[in-house]
Length: 224
Length: 302
Picture 1 (cartoon, one colour):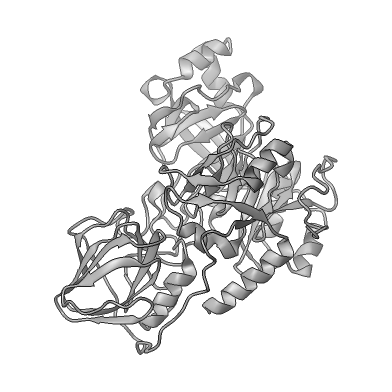
Picture 2: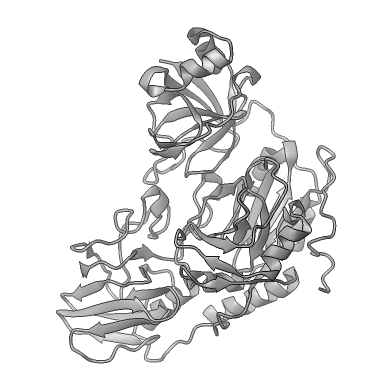
């Protein structure tokens, strides 16, 4: 192999220096560029999504990284490389649409709530209060169309995914997977712990805004 | 209008897909070989972006009460028409009112595309007519076709092209799929890398548009939990069992398994033609070389 810049075995260990001025990136394929964005993921996503990049087909934020998908036959422009060499300025924490979402906690709507509360050493009411007292931030969407990964879950409520996923989880189920809270947009298999259910549609492809929650949005749950 | 008399294994209405919704968790999807569908569209006088049918392994029997002009591109399938006349590939085919087109099995490869003059005019969903099976939207009622379905077609505007269109020259199946080392290639030890890049893998039956599941030497890696990352078609994920999955057109937009490599875009049409039981090998290529190939491939398609 004669390549050097994209040598798969060169520079494999990114330096984790918080928010580097120049974002470290790696190829996923020649149409995919993975940016290491760490805590600046939302800021970097917002900055890129707000720009005009003829070579970019899609921008996908995730957990500490952003994927740029380039259009067929396109290459990264000098302008894009320059933008990636500069800091992404974080937006104030108060930005992003605030959604108040009503949740029916426990019972058939939240099959795992009692067990989770017990594991957390809380009674049911305290657990529900803990879950609904904080403001969450949509870090990214994935897994299914419209499935939000919400940051902000209190540490006491973190819970590993279930050892064996359920065959069917109802649409609208509010669930906990590790340190994330999520909402299942459609019914289907799922391995997260169920604490409740919302009465709104979080994803509807026929709607003008198909996804209720967008990266950077804020969420407050209100117990029904 | 086209009436489905008998459905194939997985007949899906597809166009060029709905790119740009990855941040909502929706992959671009669309025809597994968009250039093949675009070529078939041009043969019948359609805009390249018109919706047609993607046919997999076994095709449907389609009835054309008012006749129509169609074109087939992609893998060759056994095919007959009710009039008994020949059915050419990569050329416009004029069907008389009341004629039927009977697609059988794929003779080689896995998928073909059928364009019809005027396009299949199912409603646009998020800017596209492509079926997205995992969430059941787009296409014809969000699902594969069934006997009795009636597909709406539009009015043909342009002249039908008289010529034939030849797609990009296919690389022989025996040649390795070209890949770029992925963002987590360093998570794999020498044995794991050797397994992927130096040994053959077989395509498992549990493969679909979400991903091609492979079976072969175990690509061992450090089993550290990986934060979710954006993924895309062609990305080769390796779950804890060490058996790689090449993500397909309807795969998830984020994943938590290490990505050892990514199949270059110029070889995605070859992924569309892999069927269970096929053997694949991988070979690395530089990003620059891959981008040059992609530019060449897209210029053939326009």
